[in-house]
Image 1: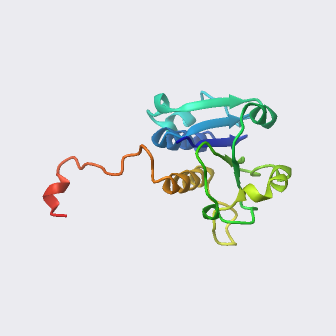
Image 2: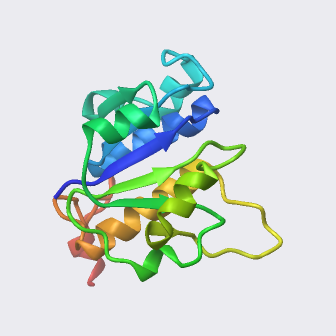
Image 3: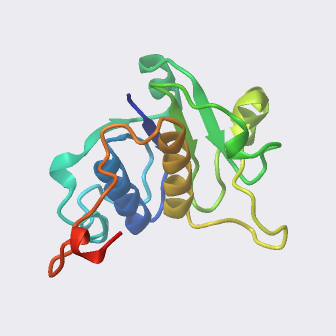
Amino acid sequence: MVLNIVMVEPEIPQNTGNVARTCAATGARLHLVEPLGFAIDDKRMKRAGLDYWHLLDITYYDSLEEFFSKNQGEFFFFSTKAPRRHTDVRYPDGCYLFFGKETAGLPEALLFQNKDRCVRIPMLSEARSLNLSNSVAVGVYEALRQWDYPALSGAGRLRGYDWSDAGL
């Protein structure tokens, strides 16, 4: 199964680096739509992604128009302005989860034209928004939960102990 994450004009390198790490750790593909608010070789972005860059499938686009001309599938637009919850939709294999820039989100015209595909992460009405990289993680893991976490490890190992010795 394939999950695609689309970041439209991200501005903060650390957020993009954190999203890249999430994508690398989950097998999601990352699509970056320019303009970016930083140079792609920004040390802060690379540091946030740590040593996961070799696991990342990443594609760059000059604009949303270029992105849409090269990709098709089911698109879901995450926004604080959306009318329904991100858990109220089913994410099919190959879908694209869109996230906008930190200061403005996704273009409102795009949201308005795709009302049935707009979703929001519930939060207190007094809060403006979640951090962008946290929002991406919430969206990624909801889609993967619906798919029963394909190809992801569901168990970990302790360094100094063996779980079988815990009597669970």
